[in-house]
Amino acid sequence: MRAMLLTMRLLLAVAVVAAVAGGWAEAGKPKLKTCDKGWECSGSIYCCNETITDYFQVYQFENLFSKRNAPVSHAVGFWDYQSFIAAAALFEPLGFGTTGDKLTKMREVAAFLGHVGSKTSCGYGVATGGPLAWGLCYNHEMSPSQDYCEKDYLYPCIEGVEYYGRGALPVYWNYNYGLVGDGIKVDLLNHPEFLEQNATIAFQAAMWRWMTPMKKKQPSAHDVFVGNWKPTTNDTLSKRLPGFGLTMNILYGDSICGQGFIDSMNNIISHYQYYLDLMGVGRGSSGDNVDCAEQVPFNPSYKAATT
Image 1 (cartoon, rainbow, N blue to C red):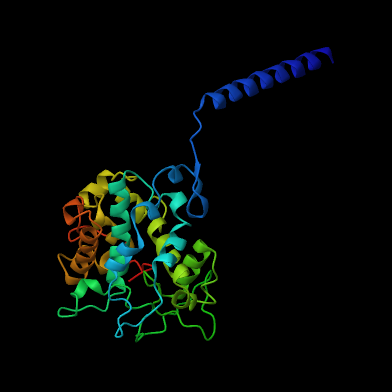
Image 2 (cartoon, rainbow, N blue to C red):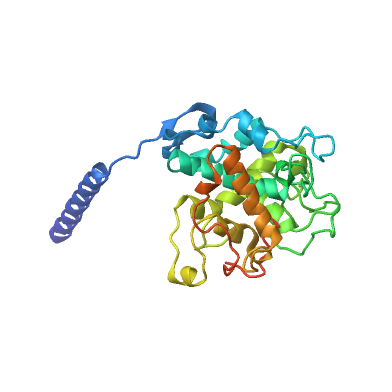
């Protein structure tokens, strides 16, 4: 009995020492400073940096999407700066538009909107203002080529619901609506129409796609663009290097990348560089590895959330 008590005391003493040592170790760790900038950004280290409204103003948004409310556009009155900023407030604490120095932040906003502008454009070669001035012309697919319903255990098609392309980075297929909806906590599987009825939700869905890796051990578009990701040897051999080009690889896979300098890829790059110019950054700051012409796709024949 006495031996048991001694053993228990010894174990207790060891536990106390371990707890104290653990407390010292925690105390020795520097606490990362977080900041609160009100509704736009709070409770994050990224909120200590400039937020998007500090360097990207209403007039710049209007310049980038100057023809979106033209009479011939298909989403007149739908998209606006306020909806973009309201959506961004969900992701700025995670680093969207708040990572790095001012140049990095502005480049990320231009890159994200470059994708959005390209995928929602109704511009063409001789369009008034030029083909790059017509981003955010659409908020949904005008003539769906199919019903985009596929058997899926987690996200089954809902009877009477159509899953054609909608949003700022158009979402297709029932399983993608379910996945993105879970990500932004909106029931898009039952109500995909929210992406063409609410611009804030449409921007949120696109930002979630930008910020979220689609597979384990693969990066997000955000990470490869702001420098949070380092390529492996296999990535380097596959010509997958950090930069705007790799964001296309992540978002669109082999529908855009690894096919040489095709028009659809060049169009996305052109929107990105055009927006850099309009934002006062200049296309000279596009960064390295702007295209994905020779990149091996992360997921060959992968059905991405956007097409």
